[in-house]
Length: 253
Figure 1: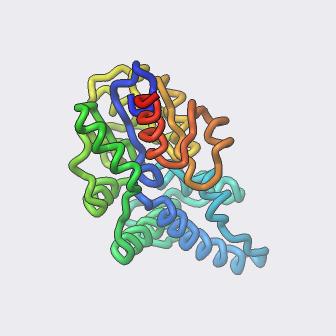
Figure 2: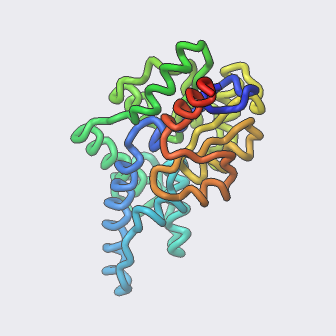
């Protein structure tokens, strides 16, 4: 069915990097926040400033994860321990919450300034699924998921949305744990083995594999196909349009 095995009856999509061209916005926001923090730390400790790598550090430590987890994991990679703080901490404060708030403020500013563009191949794939009456969900760690979907003009294409706000409300651990994807499958009344997960993040692919989903599709936007496979992707495409093209070729054979 649309490039996937016949036993797949439900389709679960990550947001940033799979549906919308916002992964690069998040990478830029993480870099802006962490570089400001790391530069201040280097001056405070009289040590070398080593900037955040928007490819290697982003892919390894923050991509696809809840914001606070990404902050903690990157700090740990630099052997930095900060107080947790509270949501009331001013953005940029020397705490996990303060740094995370600064990152979120930057993302929202960039989205306001630049807008949100969906990937055309993903939009076409979603429309074909809707015409076929197949259930669709978005599963995102972002608390801004609904705003991004609306800005991209694709908020009406989904039956279920499991985002950062839902995860917080229902106490669901974020990716790479499978809980958010499993919650979406339950909401669609579909067993995991009959659902497909679409992810561009290594943590997200690992989440789909851990949840026992029937197919995990890695979407390679940045040249990390091998890493996506190593983390559990059953197949890797550069764009969802490839699945449509493959299905059309099979139909014409």
